[in-house]
Amino acid sequence: MMQLENNPKLGYYMVGNKKFFAKPQALVEATKSGHFPEWHFNRPIFEKIGWDQEPETDLRMLYRLRAQQLREKYDWIRVEASGGGDSTTAIFSFLLNGIHLDEVVFRYPKTGEKNMSNDPYNTKCENTLSEWEFAARPLLNWIAQNHPAVRCTVHDYSENMLAGSTDETWVFNTKDYFQPGHAFKHDNIGMIDHRKDADAGKRICVLYGIDKPKMCIRDGMWYVYFMDLQANHSNSVVYEYNNITNEYFYWTPDLPEIVHKQAHLIKNWFMLPQNKFLQYLVRWPNHSIAHRTAYEQMVKPLIYPDYDPATFQVAKPTNSFYNEMDHWFYVNFKETRAFQVWQAGLDLLVKNIDAKYFNNELGRPVGFVGFLSPFYCLGPADYQDTGVNNFSKF
Image (cartoon, rainbow, N blue to C red; front, side, top):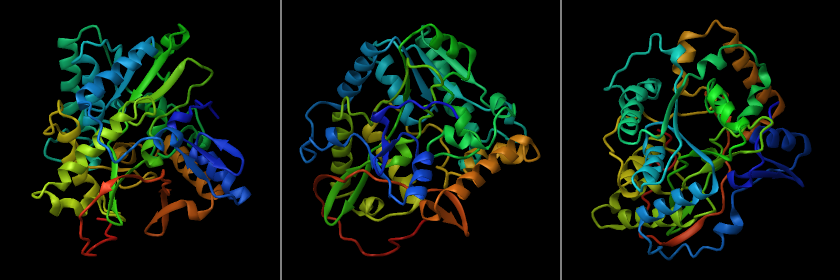
């Protein structure tokens, strides 16, 4: 089992009096002890904020301040880029403000391209690999042309993934994402150059664009909250290194004004008379993947003012175990040992964790249940819930 970074800013779990930085270990312990896990995400900081008062500082200024804050803290900053609005805006926050960024890396399974066509008209999640051609490559080309001092890296993580050098315990190298690729995708030293950077003793920041505010209308009030599924996105395996730190650009206790400002911009937009009819997208409870997708598309222009919302992007995946993003793996590598090891890892989780901690579809586990932070109140809402399709998933 590899060493995970014990970074409380990324969230952690308490099971009884034991602390865990990875969800699988926490749920195994909860199953053994009977203690229900509690997820902690920077609560002492977020509870002190007057969430009902919108920050006066302009959002672009907050992004610039965050970039400068990170620049002053680290020797090497590497952004994990997808071509989407979250990571692209993080990149722009450095480059458009003249703040040096050391590296942008895009993770792409080159070995898995077979039978996967680049189709700009197919936005199903199974077509995720096309985001390289239509979103990430144009971004990297723009960076190379306009900011040549930035190292642009494309990492073929499928090489390590298919090498067959692991066993079913790979599931303990990720926190909440158990599709075949995730544990290998964001490997902090999976490339020779990245290991050299770590060996050189640099203070390294691995920066993720996590995430858009989670918003809801509940009991007549607007709330913002955090969910462990998004906060568990980083692969914080750091091996023997203590000079690698995973950071989230937006969901950070070091500049909470970012989420605070974003949340009010979103609330204000939904409160406009011409937009109130769309408030059903953020009602509570809401299990609809389609609603989540629509919400995220609507808020991008509000909180990512320099990102082109017409940029190609596929739909969000529907689950963790059988995530559609790794369709290339299911099609091309079904008869391999890597496929068998992936399935063995899922079996290991199901065998050792109580069934109540799993989401199920068609009678089988497809991922862990989510854990939430407290709800932070932004003020009153005027949404009238009709009760129609409140529990629709699609």
